[in-house]
Image (cartoon, rainbow, N blue to C red; front, side):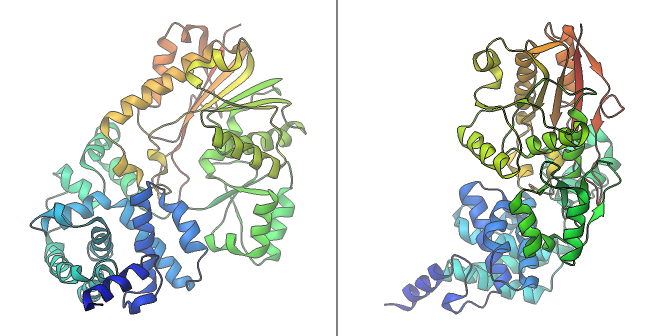
Length: 470
């Protein structure tokens, strides 16, 4: 076997992020490369891949933390990193994808983490060598050019050049322009900075299986902390200061038993605000997905009325999600009267002529309020997607309108911040023929729920409530 073939063999043996083949790249960087590659190849979410390949690995805690930081940073800055790498290449299209993954990691370290040039180049070359031995020389040349660019990055004045502003915060230019137009430059900068922060961890106590006191006591017994969330104020909502707490056996047991559920505080606020003053006889949740909101809603019903909603129905357009919902609701002791799979745009076909006291639409959206948790969204999204989402969202409201009982409510929620998907859709619904039968009603004591994203905050969510006229 030639030396080149031996190197290729060693390279292939390290593709899973292990230490085989004598790679000199650090374990954290190899693990980050494994995650970045999986996100690219499978179109997966980085957090999901990290949970399986890093959180559950035998890496040292420090290596797990650094691998997580690198992987999330790279997927959040991917477009900006590619622009920088392309500036350092004669033929950007000639670089194979897995080599580019390695270059992205080292470029992120150089530009956004301000790592030592020598260490960044040395480790970048070793990382490239693990996937393509012959690419070591290329990596060395590219990364040295990147170091030379560091002083001029973001290649313009962010105060006067929106493209430079976008690069500085690792956002697509079109999205930075949109944010500035909708929010003002100062608020847009705050939003982009907060979107690059680590996401805080929140849990909800499932009142269908446990009390707040029992859960707090279990955390304390395990030597872990919980902080009651004051803003937004939601009963049963706690912040977990150290995410590693979820790996402690006693806490993992609480999750497995269905006594707690991981959910952002803003998402919990929306769920707590959906229920009307009086217990509804019938309830339909559209876009139920993996049942997180289902668990939160029935838990809140248990807290408020001492029992869950009897005729609670769910709808999702994917059968595998419906099956997952049934498995999770059983685990969490949450009652679902009927779990449906079908098209929310043709609700007549799914539920016939049935009317409901409450219909809750947890709408598909651009997800821009959750960028800390799903950083890859910003590079997968396109400007015209916002219009497509808004048309879909309005269609779901129009389809549901005829299934609200007189005096009943229709609640619409997203996890995004764009006016087109939030206020725009609400206004378009009220202006429609179907919407004429409804009026906007307070939710959580205001005209809408619209949480802001800032350092340490919950995610940015939106919700409005419409009531059908008697």
